[in-house]
Length: 217
Image 1 (cartoon, one colour):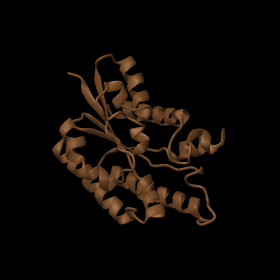
Image 2 (cartoon, rainbow, N blue to C red):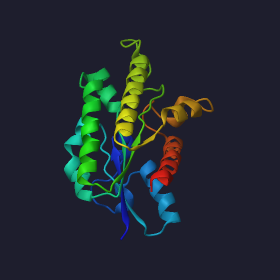
Image 3 (tube, rainbow, N blue to C red):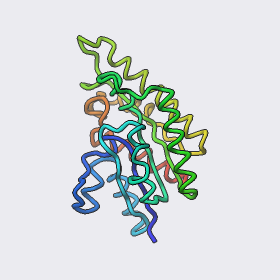
């Protein structure tokens, strides 16, 4: 029986996936989840089934709210989670951010419950990341907008790593990789608006995902 790999997160994972059940290719979207499926599926025919349940706009609170239908009911053998930037972004623009303490508590609860109900699951927590771009750059009405994004996302990344370490889950660093990539080409070459990856940005995530998967499978 093929093992189930589930990708969870926000719009970075969602990547325009089809909700209308128009076949497995459409429902995985155009991002790193499909790129991972392409490589692993090619190298290991029929060994894995790939599901993407990322939802655009999600914070960790939203991810927890759909834990049953979109995670537990799929009974994944492997699960990767990428969440955190909206927990900051929603606070900056709409006063609806998660807050650091709540982010840590809910993320910890999410991971602990998943491990308790799916004791054989293998998990990866991907680090949230940000660069400067149209969505994150300073504006006339927010002269320190990028500083707020960068400080907020770095703190969410630190907390995500803490959750991973406290629960024996693989942590996948990404911010440093994007920072290094941004030295070779403009930030928007990798993240089109400072948050959402281009094809090249998704390739970067895919490569780090594949390396991490090799260490937990």
